[in-house]
Length: 349
Image (tube, rainbow, N blue to C red; front, side):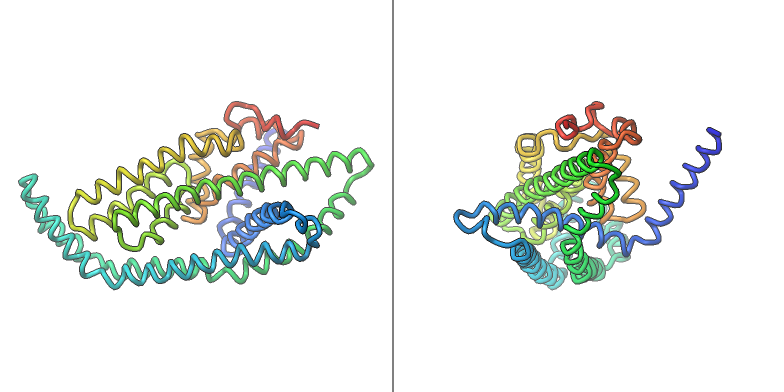
């Protein structure tokens, strides 16, 4: 019986992974829509705290205002990003000359002729194509905005009906009360985590933008937004977010001094925000084992690429939260948690 159960679990896991890979074009926009829904709920709370009129605004108007605000900010950012990437593409010849100049200086400094090797390597690379590919990736990513917006709209329309459906599943009043409390705790915890993580990443991006602007790095908005996105990727995200602007400074100025300054300044911002500001803002909301975080990063990155790496931690946090609310899956939540304390503050009745 145990063997049959194990085989069934294995087959189920393989089927789930297969579905995740095959249906990623559908699932990624849907998950992003769910995350946006959680952000909309947090924005609704902010509108409700407006003096005198906040509590009088009907729910449909709160949803409309929240979506307009959210998509207005996203549209503005996308417009700036497209212009920034186009500017980088136009300056590519200048960057390539600066890179050649830097390689000559490096040859003189270390006494090893690497110019020929570098020329052979870069001759096989087309930086214009790489940046156009990047622009295309961003365009495709935000090209799903219509579908994501459609998902968000229908999630908001189904929000109240969905609660009634869940309550209809309950067998009695006690089960109904437990289910209502559980869904309320899960929804509150997930929306809080997503909103706080977005806030922390925004602080990192804004501080990095100011630093890059002062140093004089080209297209600081693009690099700041990239830093904002990469901060959702655990461990390696902060490292990559620090290296990319430094490489840009190397290409732009043709010397290592500016690149070193960018590396130190942006790295310092990452350290301060990640080790001082983030723990104070987020507290214990990320109760996930470091090993599980790395494994989740590898797993979601393998099946969904960069989008999976960005979504890996939010998805893992959601799974730990959900598993902690049900007796049959609570042991799994304990294994995935950091110290075995599965959100005690959330499981209180």
